[in-house]
Structures are given as C-alpha cells and as structure tokens.
Length: 354
Image (spheres, rainbow, N blue to C red):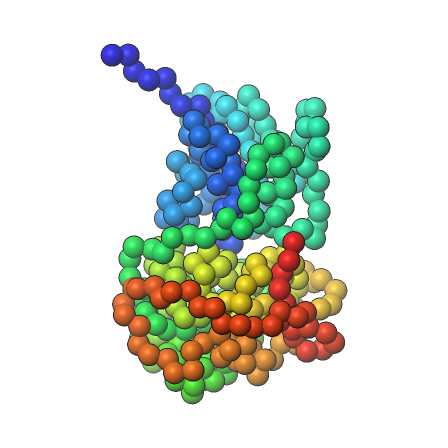
C-alpha cells in the first residue's frame, strides 16, 4: 500500500502574548474550517503551547518570539515552503516579509506586496482585536465568527478552587493599578466572606508579595512565580471572579465564561475589552488614549477608585460564598447588570460593542 502524500502546510504568525493568542481564537478557528485538509502550524511563544489543544484549530506549534511586540525569526521552519502563510501578527511589512522569506505559494497579509484581493483588508486602529482579524480574513473570503472564543474547561483541578483571583500585574506600568489599591480591594472582598488569591507573572513576585503583605493574605493564598499556562487556565476557569487590569488573564476569564472585572487605562475597552455580557464588567474613565507601553500608571487608570471596583466585584459575586468542590465548574451565572458607558470623572461600566 502506497503512503499517503503529506498534507499541505499552512503557517500562521501570531507570536505575541496570552491575550493576543486568545483574541485570535475566532480567526484561527475560521482558518481551520476554511482549510480542513491543511496542517495548521502556528508560530507563537512555546510557553503558551500548553493552551493550544483547547483552541481546537492548530496542529503544530512553531516556537517563535521576540522582545516586546517585535517580529520574531522564523528560522525554525523546516521542510518545504508553506502552501499558505497568514499574517495575524500586525499590519506592517516586517511580519509580512518574515513570512514572505519562506516563499509560500500564497501569502495573506495587510501589507500585501502583490495584487490585493477584490476587497483588500483595511486596518482600523480603533477596531476591536477580535473583530479585526475576522474582518481581515473576510477580505480573503474566509468566514470567522468573533464570538467563537470559548475554551473548554481544563482537565486539571484549580490550584485554589472557589477563590476569587486578583491579578495586579501587566506587561507595562501604564496598565498596572497601584498595589495598595489592589490590597485595599482584597481586604474588602475578604471582609465580605470571600477567599481571595493573588497571582502574577513569572517576573512579578515583588508586586505579588507587596499586594499580599498590605492585604495580610495568608501564605497559601499567594501564588508566586507565575503559574504555568495550564494551571493558570484552571485557576481562572474554576474561580467565581477575576479582578485584573487590561492584560492576558482578563481574556482567559472571557474564554472560560468566568465573571470578571477589568480595569482599563490607556486603551479603551472598545479595542481590548470583553464582549457584551452580564458576567463581565470593564471599568474605564473615558478620555484621550494613552501609551499602553508607558512606564507610569496611566492617569485614566488612576481615576478608578477602590470603592467603585469593590462594588463592581461584589455585584458579580454570590452574597454568601460557599466552598467549591475542587476543580468542578458551576453552571454559568446570569447575574443582571447594567452596561452604560461611564461619564465625567467616575469610572463607568462599559460594554464593548463592535
């Protein structure tokens, strides 16, 4: 019996962070449906590979990453040129050229060097990230649903079942609410009878310890060192609530339908916020956009106070918390909550709509 011919390979470049991976899930699933006979290879940071099986759209991970949001080398690609290459990394020539250097038969990119499609993709700076890449694919005749973003619950148990998760970290200082405010928030939630755990990234132990110290958290509720993606996913999936800034774990809460309160500063939730849902609250003071990679907390973020944040969190939590069984997921909540954009100086509950 003759061997089957190898499957054609399709390479997608999305070598960014956790939130970037999760906001690209609808686009990746659209690509999978459009090219069922291809081997889908995703160029991405190897550290996030643990989450890829849950996406259900990727066959192989090509390890690729660069500092910040730079374009990584694709030197790890081996074998024949990709049949198709798709740039979900950005809209500039750098990411396009990295894929073009592999000589794919067909290249889909915003910065298209050849004849554009009949309706070329348009980069809209204020478009939500989930919608951006679905619109991009639509220009090439590929259908993707921006609402197709849920992940199945992880098989492993939660490191802290039933605990509210507070994640004070973010990649840049401009998106980090002050540590003392997170501590005050934790004290409020614990006073209401909720167990709270604090988490951070691999290089955020100092921040985690500061928040925990001011909040007087017991040692077992301080999750240091940056949880591996699988355990972080389980922690968020089985939590009653996540409170964080505009960073990757907020998208993980959306993926698992975990109630969340997200604090926005330099960037509007219209671009990176949760989809409209009574489970998710985005706090934001409208104003001119700031630098999402700035070195100081954004002035708009600093206008969000502890009282407003605690009230938003408590609205999403059950009034009488009970210990949850280890690692089991409760039915999704249907807590009713208004979604009117805030005005003036007070942070508002914002519903990010396309």
